[in-house]
Length: 248
Length: 204
Image 1 (cartoon, helix red, strand yellow):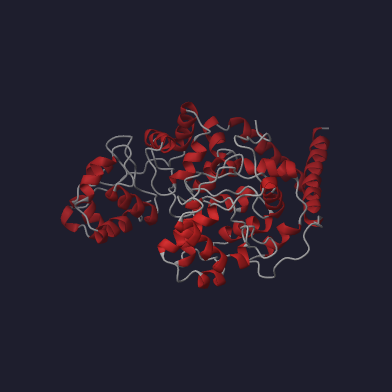
Image 2 (cartoon, one colour; image 1 turned 90 degrees about the vertical axis):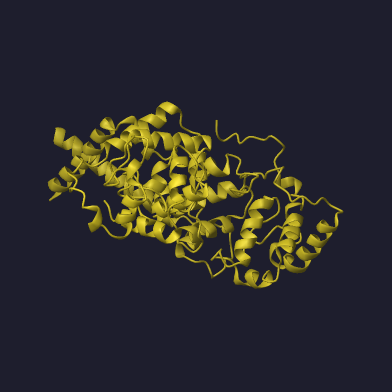
């Protein structure tokens, strides 16, 4: 009798494991039609085509929230970037690059590993959840307000150098993996810009490295000042003081 | 054959259930997915995912607990401890002590230490470790610190040791008793720091 029960239990256990695995690998998303061929890994591509599960996204994001905050707003000192509202493709590519060691980010690396974040499905779930979060109404901005000469110069630099990929409104391009930069923290963007210019961010787009090669530190401060001050579209921004109701 | 598979599966199931029952609170906290300690330090606390992160397994609970509290309060903020600080906010002092106690309990049984070599016979990092007074706090064998709040220096990677020495020298790491070590670090240059770290990393 005892043996029979254990046989049933074991079979049930094995069945449940194999069937949930099969479910995950056969799901296909319909929301995305064209993705670049130049992703770094097959898993990136896979995660992008999976249908996201919000409940699991909330669960997976809990660990991320320790640094990026429950609202996905990051920290205004720029230590941790805002993730809320970022294109899903960008989030997936960066996660994949960090865990493949194509982008040096030792702080993030452990949490990008499959052991921590989970499989492609978990990656699809959490990035979909993050992409739909409303953005920080008070991102960290550079010190030059609209109308100052530095603001004007920064805008000119932005218009001449950045709009082709990141867009007039800093909206980026989900299809081409260009990040949304509108609403991002000034100090975070400064750090990344500098690393890209100086070759420290290894997964940077080579076109961008070339484009900003001649930027002085002063140019950099002005162009990022402008980028940090592009207004976030009303539909994407959260009210001041909003708290994520998905966590209690 | 079928019976055999069943037996294996069953014993797997029961062993999982059994170990769940006896998991100490500290171990549970360390290994759960919310506190995520293991994401950097490894499930057993001694297989860090990158060499810049420390193995914790040889440390006394007093040292571990003091570091956790200092990282939580921001007193220690060198290296990548800012990420750990985010997670420390999820833990109270009692839980910190439980985790520290569990980690300390996983330390390997103490092995007999070989009698220290005569000073003249030492070379490289080992010699510097004696000459520059490192041993005064950390012990002649680098694993018998004179107080439990001082770290054991064995079982650590070269990268981690090097970063800590440099950060204490520059003041980036200034928590606990490291002010005392900062003075001593004035006695060594970068090349000597490298030699000491290289030697320490060979000690298991």
